[in-house]
Image 1 (cartoon, one colour):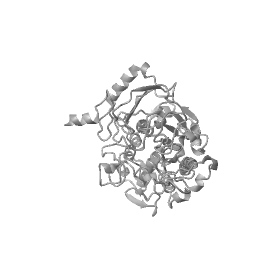
Image 2 (cartoon, one colour; image 1 turned 90 degrees about the vertical axis):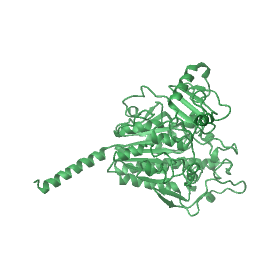
Image 3 (cartoon, helix red, strand yellow; image 1 turned 180 degrees about the vertical axis):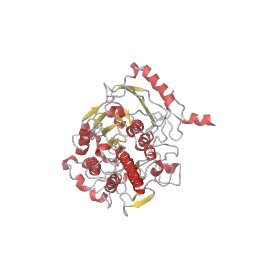
Image 4 (cartoon, one colour; image 1 turned 90 degrees about the horizontal axis):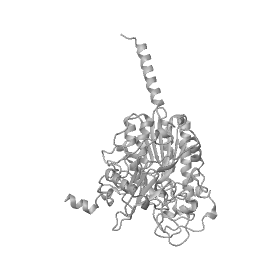
Amino acid sequence: MIPSRIIIVLVGWWLGVCCTSAASRLNVVFILADDLGWGELGSYGQKKIPTPNLDRLVSQGMRFTQHYSGAPVCAPSRCVLMTGKHLGRAEVRGNLQARTRFPQFTEGQYPLSAQALTIPTLFQRAGYSTGAMGKWGLGPVGSTGDPNSKGFDLFFGYNCQSVAHSFYPPHIWKNADKIIINSKPIPGHKQQPEGEVRMEDWLGQSYAPALMIPEAEKFIATNARKPFFLYLPFIEPHVAMHPPKEAVERFPADWDREVYRGENGYIPHPRPRAAYAAMIHQLDEHVGRVLAALDRAGVSDRTLVIFSSDNGPTHEGRGDSSFHVGGADPKFFNSTAGLRGYKGSVHEGGIRVPLIVRLPGRISPGTVNATPGYFADWFPTLCDAAGLDKPTDLDGQSLWPVLTGASPSLSSRKPMVWVFPEYQGQVAVRLGAFKLVRLNLNTPSPGPWRVYDLEADPGESRDVAAAQPDLIQRAEELLRREVSDNKLFPVHIPGVNTSPVESEKKAL
């Protein structure tokens, strides 16, 4: 019989080994901005809005100049990120409300299926603590796309994108619990055609972002001694513009000589340019608090921090041409830094996004990398970073060799694919330095293929399709292989697939 004191020593040794092993595993913090343009950070050329925390993150890590979101709008972009499937094979390819197919749900977007494997699910199975604070958009509470069903131990924030149009909503969610935060919520949409527009009339009691950041800080502190995956899909700078008054007043009064009255949707604001800048500056402050929380917990040196945006900045509205949707003014801020298009477009301005990645000791500080990549790449990349086996059916490529300096770029880049049913139907394919775009696919008059040489023409101003017929043939052959049917989100690509009407006839 082994003496009890030896058993105690052995148990203590084993627990120490386990704890040391767990503590040495890499943590991941993925921060996602909402509608942040490629040119809206100081490190990407922004001149008017200070972003000191993100600029510091750039100095400590790697900044990418050719990274793309999963889609030009919120839900499908997040679907690509979470599942590693590009838009030709993703389950969710548009911003479809759940209630249109599932009337039992009063809020939330069309849910991921029970079969959809997500990054947090894989990390959770590997023993990681998993948390998310911010905006979800991939399935209502109680659905198959509920955050808790898709790998998160803790979710705190907005489940529904529409509710997130207000920064003073009636409620947010903590897992399956609805938390009432404003007895008198402020609407996200309303016009004020006449009279004085006052900022204080559109400010409520409980500012949702101010509740989410402490939850993120607490999660980091609580899980500092074990590996964690933390997803922070913050809501800034998506309109409506609801920043606190003191945040708005940091910016010059002479910026705003015209009041926004809600003509292009969302709510009025007396100082729309200052308000938009305040939202981005607050986003930067959120990042600073997260980085400080990692420092306090003593885990910064073993935490991979990623920052990006789900798509480009807000597009033009149908009302007053002085403003974009929600009163934003991307032209004033040069939000796309000369790229063509905005949110909702598969042109560069709609899908090229900032990407900053930091991991002390593994990623060289202050480096800039031009490797093309997109959201589908993050599933395999994070698997490699954490030493997890990758699923075999992912569409992206691991960027881990590029991040860690094992390779200056990907030796062979898979084509990148976007098949987007909304905004009249669009498709884009990137083949090497060339990008092929086709628009108006779900209309009676689909547009032609247009081809752009992004090395020579990043602003997509010169169509070189006439000189590149072989590229068009390659793109169509690729799409025939890569695009799966999706009856909820159909796109008719001539020469590639059948129209929705023809598909229904075949089914009959």
